[in-house]
Length: 120
Image (cartoon, rainbow, N blue to C red):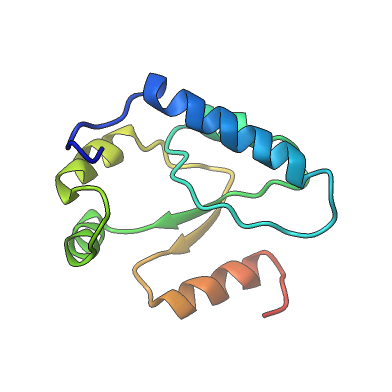
């Protein structure tokens, strides 16, 4: 991605395998863990949903124009030109907590915590 080339599933496979292994380890213990990753496709999420009762996905839904503006304002992140390929790959989940990511960060976090019934 740093070179401006979108990733494909072959590129993502080792990363997803590593994340799945980490999740397996976390599931051996009490407590909660937050892992931020794109998991754009249903097959990616299936690889990561190691325990359907304990692994919950949050879909940060955002208008593409808002996402692009945010990417352009960030430093040291993938090129905004790759956003179109990311959105083309995205298979919006139908089994995730969905939150409007266009809100301020504090509101997004509060919405997620409320939907997960977590104390803030």
